[in-house]
Length: 447
Ligand SMILES: [Zn+2]
Image 1: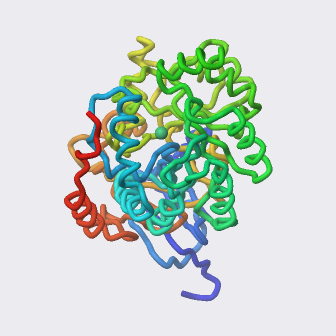
Image 2: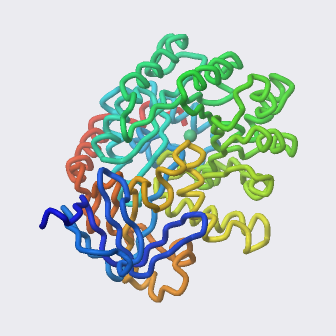
């Protein structure tokens, strides 16, 4: 190294790079150089002038490089209950399985353990950024921080007590404490999380909207997940969940509505007018029999619709790859039109659209100079990927998680050649098995 050679923390040399930027720029023989977590150079290798020195070099010839995924809605700790309460409607699944289990087992240690398990799965399926809704969410944050991923962390607030908050009036204090603890943190972003219109009062939404503005954070909630919820709110308040929320003043571009499976045409008009971000969770909606979200209609109205997995106990996977693959197929069959939710759009839902909804446009979701180095290295050299004519089609309709070879988040190599470098995968799996054997989960399920 000579003094006039520029230094970069990481060099990714070769490979076909899909930036997923607005013009879908691609580099056939690319070079990516990073420093302080950011992309400092991205382009064709031949266009980089002069020598450089890199702390680490990854050779990516023959590979595909693209932005890492953004999982815009999940509940990290619920992976401990994966596979329990299968084939139930949401209300039964919640009241007979998940809430009784959480009442019994939800504590800081288990939230941490379940979150560690979830982030392992997310790393192995290429997620760099996630948005969590949890109890004891500071312990989910610990797992996210240790994993090297970027996370939005939110304490789930209800108008009643929860496993972590005895007095609902304390809810915003817990959120404020998280905000204080992670102020200025590069990868952990607290936000305000309300469970749903059927468990939270209008005052809670009103207050959340005001505090969100004061604190400069997003406000998120499940909304209109099931027909039952839609009808329940209509008979309780004489309004649809969206119209009821509109009255609280919470709906705007900083509000994120999870699910939105049941929405009237008037609801969709309100959501478009208020520029609300929607997070679609097709696997969870399918598994719980909740319905098919009117995603095509919302997109046609200019609404930003992103994508998340929801929890591993209602999906039952945390893979954003399979989620986007399902979304792309589901809405074609819904519309009887294969041009709907095209491959490129499905990829944007899982990356740049989610980043925009969460206020991280220009930071993650695409690959460009100045963006955080959040990217995947894909190895297409396997029978399910060869030959590669159209990269976007191949990723959306043929790729499997095992093709995701390496994950880089904020410039740090989190997984290389399928080996997780930040967490002890084997130890976490054995700890989960040990916990599972030490408790009798079936004693607490009411089915
Ligand atoms: Zn959820």
